[in-house]
Length: 143
Image (tube, rainbow, N blue to C red; front, side):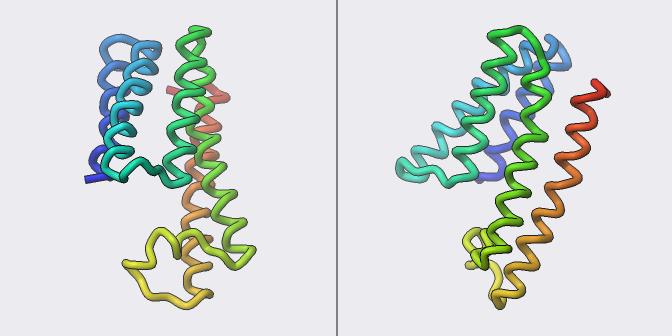
């Protein structure tokens, strides 16, 4: 259910962008994210994990900046920054022997510390090309 809810802001963004442009899409993303995270907040008994705080705060910051200044550069920088933060956090957690993927998936997998570190690094490596690709598209304004 959580994963399905997390797609709602993206769907709202793409529908609004298709029919009303990027500023409307930023507004739709912002409103949908706040609604979805309010639902998460209630369902999680008043708590967010760190990833949820990062996504929520960066969405408010970048969508808010886009809407206030009427410039989509702020919205275009959101994704590379989030992907970079996730990659860096995962790399650091593996380097200090506290792999974050163990916290997230300990009920799904039973791994050794070495296995958790490898899985964490693999996820970090997943976020690197995502961040680089969105950064390239942001800088070169590729649509």
